[in-house]
Every structure is written in C-alpha cells, then in structure tokens.
Amino acid sequence: MSKPNVAVCLAPGTEEMEAIICIDMLIRAGFNVTSASVDSDGHLMMKGSRGIPLVADKRLVDVADIQFDAVVLPGGKPGSECFRDNDLLVEFVRQHQFDGKLVAAICAAPALVLAHHDLFPGALMTCHPDFLELIPEAQRRTKRVFFDVNHNLLTSQGPGTAQEFALEIIVQLAGKPKAAEVAKPMVVWPNMHYDVIGKEYQL
Image (cartoon, rainbow, N blue to C red; front, side, top):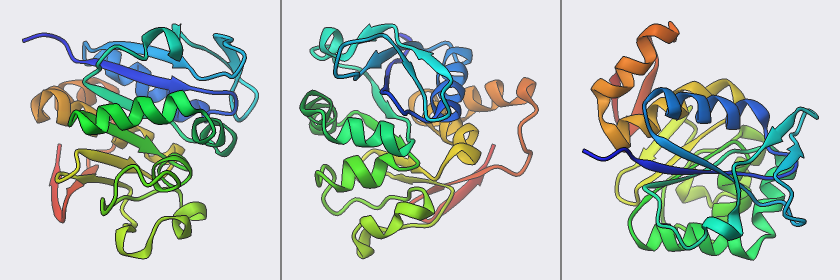
C-alpha cells in the first residue's frame, strides 16, 4: 500500500499549533507531507499567528497540479483570510473536493474559506466558536472534530483540538489501527472521540 500524500497549506498568520501538530503527526504516521506556501509574494518562510516562523516545503503554485490524497487547511484568522482571498488555493481545494479527496479544515478555515466560497454545499461542519455563525445554520455542528462522510469533509474547532483533528485525518487515510499506533507513544488523552455523522468511537 502506497503512503498517502497530503498537502498542508500555510499562509502568513496561520495558527502555528494547528499546522505543526498536524504536519508532525502525519509524518509520524508515515505519510508523505508537503507544506505549501500560499504567501502572496511566494515566500516559503512566514510568520504564524503568534509570530513564530513557519517554513513551507514548496510554493502552492509549484504543486497545484498534483493530486493529493488530502488537503489540510490550518486556521488562524489572518491565515484563513489569506486562503480565502487566494484564487489558486480556492481552486486547489475545489478540484480535490470534485475528485472526492479528503479536505480537512480547522479553526477559522471552515467558515472563512469553505463556507465563504460555498465549496461544500450542504455539508455539515464545525469550526472555532467565534466563527460558527458564518456557517449556514443547517450545516453547523459544535463537536470538537466532525467528519461528514457524505462529503469526505473533516472539520475541527481550534488549537486545542489539533491532535484529535490530525488523528482523524490518519483514520480516514490509513485506518483506525494506524491512528492508534501513532497515538499510543504520544500519550494522548485516552478519551479522545470522533464523530462520523453522529456515530462516535474511541481510539
């Protein structure tokens, strides 16, 4: 079985915990991870939402024609706004959604990017509580991590849910045993649970 290929998008103002925790845990799972810069000037190095430097592997424009198994959008309000206003990023997500690939967004990104551009009409999603009202009421969910199996869309709430978010990406791409294998040596919370359209399960 080939290793899943995952693109994690980065922008100035991206929330550092959400980006780094996700990248770290996907690498622990043995995935091929490419961090892609959406910086308008094409810089690979940028400052995150708390001023911590983030360094991307590639510019998004250089990998935009590659089909990944999953696209991950970390949050952070400034970073999500950068995603929202970047036509290439929006089309990159739209193409992967059209191809049935996993799209995973956390914190402000579900509201400011996915809902703003109506990329997943009718899909159920969660986000940071501060942005929840930007998601149509019929689509809102308040779970820490929520996977809409009908749209292959994974969303989560914020920095404090980043581990759960990353583990669920692993579940969706490589199965629950692989997620448990990653979680055990990390000593994650033993009661982490996830939603699959109303069905909860534990690692």
